[in-house]
Length: 98
Image (cartoon, rainbow, N blue to C red; front, side, top):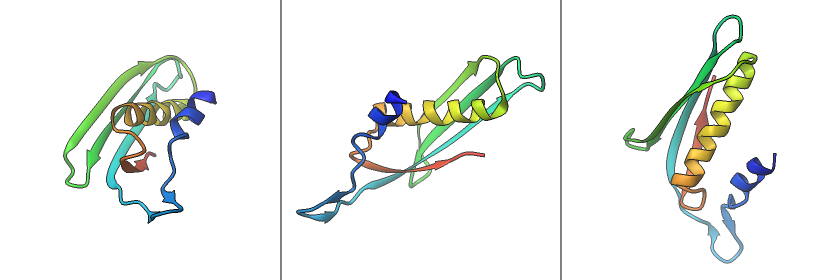
């Protein structure tokens, strides 16, 4: 949970002196899947700009668990990639998942 809090720490779009700041828009699509018995799975994602140009991708194997954990791991990893490579201070993000 502390990791998620640190990711969202810099997310502030309102400035009392200047009103709303202008941001560039990026879109993060993520997905996670597990084999039918839940013994293994994988996650992946892509970050694109408003022109649909690919800026970042990731794809990783994950361990056992239910399908919802695969989706949540994909979201978490995608937000980590986004925040470390692009940052919440310069961009607004649309997150899309199943």
